[in-house]
Image 1 (cartoon, one colour):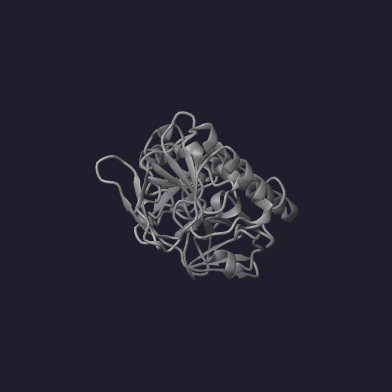
Image 2 (cartoon, rainbow, N blue to C red; image 1 turned 90 degrees about the vertical axis):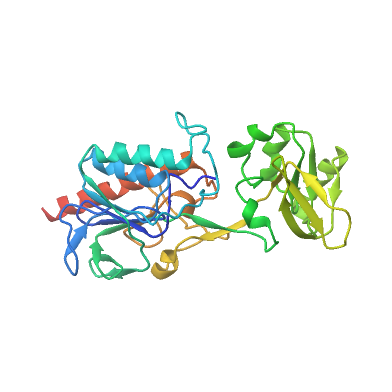
Length: 338
């Protein structure tokens, strides 16, 4: 589960370089002349913190922009024991990655880390104000997303362990094991067919939409079994990692080594609604251009909050481009006033 770099905990605000605010799940950046009340505090703010947040902090530090990182210690990937597909950190616990990222940022002496959870962001004639205290000229939202899991007893406790969504995060560990694809067949299940031939489709009472009928026909033509009834509850298999599925029609429970599920998601923080940002049909913030600008001038977004590609490498990339976009805007504005 990727949440590490991009928006680690949605209660953070990162305010950087004089007038930029970044809000993410974990951390926030604050800047040059940090003050409270009605005085300007930073040019950049980052609430939230995942791999993306540290990237913003170090990107700003590299161009000598001061910042404050607010960390709410709430992470989407908290259930995951390891993170993957990040060169140099593959198989490393997310907490270890965050600690390494923090040390890298602190060596520049430009970022202050603060434990704080942001609840409200407002626009002002000159920029933005966070929690009624911190003001800034620019705002970066990196608050990440929250998975909307089915209300099935026992499921939430196994999410991120034996029930997960990402083949690139969990695939190698379940090679050639017996798994189930939860719900109507989806194209993003395809990578799991490279990992194991032992897959079953668990429809959970759903019908197959016309748009996925061809995928379903290919699945059944390959003699992959299908179980249609609705799931009543799930439980952890004792002894070895796995899941036991129980059904509403009373048929015998079925065991799997793992379950693949692709739940919908929503914004982890209320800031998109508070600021009136445009969202797409999947509840992700709509961004434009190479730097992640949103529909509201002066507001940028990155990481899981602004993409369907909810992975650590993508969060790291978009966090860096957000930082570049903010710096470019600030410098351009300052030169225009000179």
